Image (cartoon, rainbow, N blue to C red):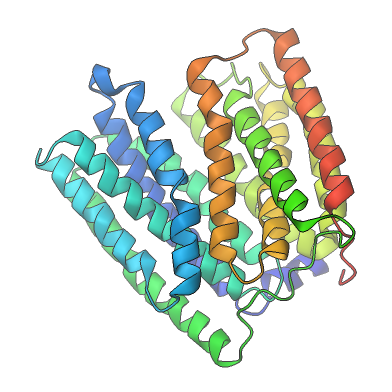
Length: 357
């Protein structure tokens, strides 16, 4: 417990907490928007796919631009793009597709900037970015609930505006780090030096693709009520944060190996048992920050690009779910076990033991 407390008090850890909230607000706005727009049946299938493509894929390009032009505050721009999209949808102006495109660009801008700030302020630790990323799961379910309970769009706009002070404070933290010249991610050294760097990038993205596919395909037939859905997303968020926190406390390779293997039985037998399933989802979610740390270890000078590669992987992993989905216990078992073992082997081969723990 002492190790975990020390991690939660790490230098500049407040950037993780700040971007937890900013990320939360972003996803509330996006999923409030989506939950409203897909109520129109012609958009029910296409709109979520379009959203995933436009929000996830461009993040690598935006991330690279942010790496090269660090003085541009993409998060502030992103917040105002979210507000414009919500206004267009709320006032029925400009057409639904225009609003979706603006929303997605705003989402991408904020995600990329959150990764830039948390990674550059972390001095090689995983917990800062893990806490930031975990905020999204809480935001997704909250956005859906805001739509379900028909909260007015003006409330979402004010919620977006509330993120601005958090963004400005996080930017000040980054400026202080830059003054000390500690923002180049040199301390990310989690890749095995004996393995080709391009191969590590490819394999890391492959893991994200696999996990993205598995994440959308995890069987949860027990999930029938609003409260059960809320609990599911809460455990996803907890798992994402724990992946980084426990890696900093006990070593990235140990946590990667354990979480990948321990998730298997809980995912297999949790389809109809909520508690079992939730434990599996938590373990499963823990590798999110680990793959980001691997990519940043190779792409130290371009953490925005590294983060963008993970979002491309997530998109590629989700595409098959829109086309087909395994529904039987046997097929799900084969997929879960096979893909988990592949991830385990890859992580074992390319992860370096953390000698700082």
